[in-house]
Image (cartoon, rainbow, N blue to C red; front, side, top):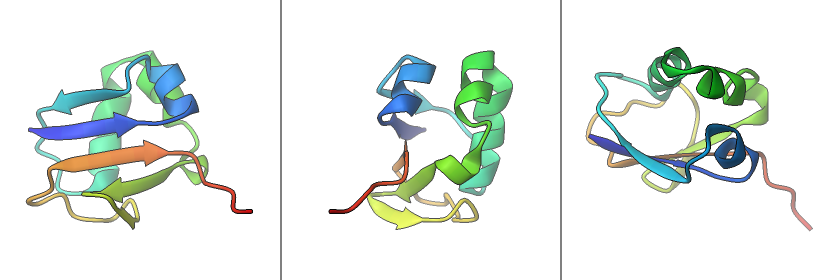
Length: 82
């Protein structure tokens, strides 16, 4: 089981801020594919991955990051600095 967190417009599209997911995914990209296949709301939220950033166990990473041993994956839009 892994905790999946959604922030900003991803949370709005999916409808929950957090959920526990049973997954066999080896990478973040594989997890995204599993989520997309669940329901239309996930497919919509993850339709443009260039507009999504990811952190595994609170460290920014890419979609090719391995999930072995991970406890948490967070998805959020790119942040703007200032």
